Length: 201
Image (cartoon, rainbow, N blue to C red; front, side):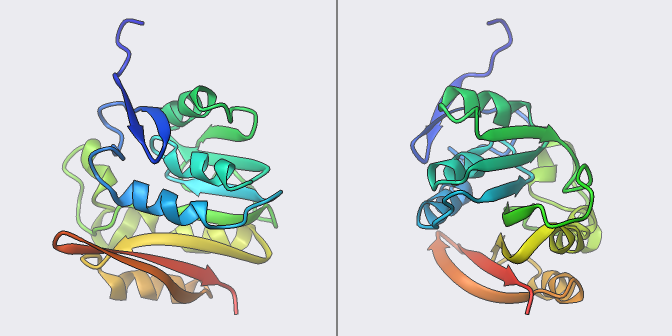
């Protein structure tokens, strides 16, 4: 098809990744998060993948047994990739900013998010995958919105970097009423990838 982006493979999936979407084949954080999700038991659960990009985390959640995965973002690639990988019946791509398209209520058992790791103004559309605005402006509402939409006992898994402003993110997490528990830390080159499990005490 004319204008079609070339395919790629990451975490065992075949993916089409548009130029402005964070590419999991070249930046390994998404593959690391997908490997973590592979070890979760998501059987019969309803999951949200916030800021899905290519959809790789949504695909991993479906592979881990989720009954339904809502993948939010400018989600064209996620929708195409879910069909390509045979989980189009369980992964629903929704064009939405964070969880704004969903009314508050107990909707999800698990929420996944690998947001931009750094504060600061993004230079362009592609850089929005790296920078979330001053004081994490673009993702500040993620934590309140997630808490409002998690079922009792639900949890949010968040991937950040050792180079993230962990104090600023921790403040947002605490203000939303979550308790953060470190569940994975993986060193890569000169950085470390950190996954927190956020629970309501």
